[in-house]
Amino acid sequence: MMASLYLYPQTSDHLQQIPDQLITCLEQLKLIGQSLDHKAWYIGDDFMRHIVFMGCSPYLKIAPESAKDQDFCHIQLQFYPSARLLMGENTRPPCCPHCHKPNPKILQSYQNQAIIIEQEECQFCQASAPLKTYAWKQKAGISRLFIKIPHIFPQEAIPSELLLKTLKKSTQLDWDYFYLHH
Ligand SMILES: [Zn+2]
Image 1 (tube, rainbow, N blue to C red):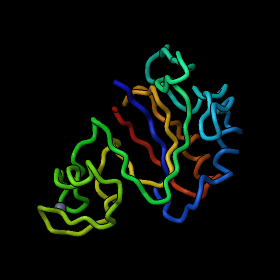
Image 2: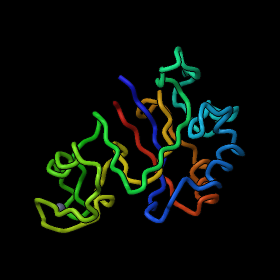
Image 3: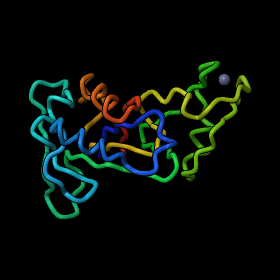
């Protein structure tokens, strides 16, 4: 099984492209190192300062074994022209922001569709709320823009407070994170 950590801005609907200052910021932090292609990089020298591992000496695979190997720790930027809900095998029904009940219907309805319906009605309390205000509990995320870091399992590592703060300062956006198994 593969797993990835994703970082994303909570508000992204106004973004038309990957902000230039984001890449500059990641370079200055040395989170990213040498480029793999125009939207992917090897990890940088200070990666382990910004992505904090819980174990004492994590094994990090930092280079591909073959040209097609994507299952190694590196950094990718993903941008979509409209917001996407990214889900994985670990994603659970999100909880309604009003009655806090998990909503399996929403999860099912997005299994095969990428287009986000902004308002979703709760099947229990009938309150209508934006999809992103449902509690996804770090097992899915909605945005146009994602920083994907493959080869990190849930709870194995978390972004440092400094990283989230610096991303906020450089992009003027609030950042959050989640993990996917795929
Ligand atoms: Zn509800």
